[in-house]
Image (tube, rainbow, N blue to C red):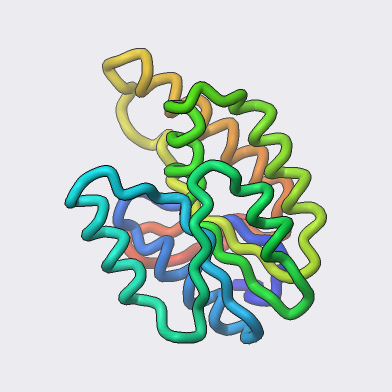
Length: 172
């Protein structure tokens, strides 16, 4: 699966196994492991999800919260021999959308940041375009923005994997 790729995007649907695959790929490389978390715990269900993800990582991992300023966190945490795991771009994008941020500018800045990473970076994102067309305008806007962001990041990454039913398939 081209485990040695310096820049990688791991895509999949909800509960597809993309985070697990991304974590395994990060751990294979060794070195310092940094988890850049984009989730914010606004309710009990999200707090439980965050706790489960934390429990899946052992003491080798250091967690950095980056719900909005992901580009700055990447710049600050990047380094030779270090692997950054960003989980996930979907939550990051929704945080920016709800905050009224310029999504195109944020996506462009993230794409540029990926191109300057000295270590390795693995980014996790939901593939939201396989489902039905959402009923409301906000959900449609989010789906469209997520699709554009995924395309932009996939173009910048050396490797792209799609995860379906826990099975990763390299698509780039």
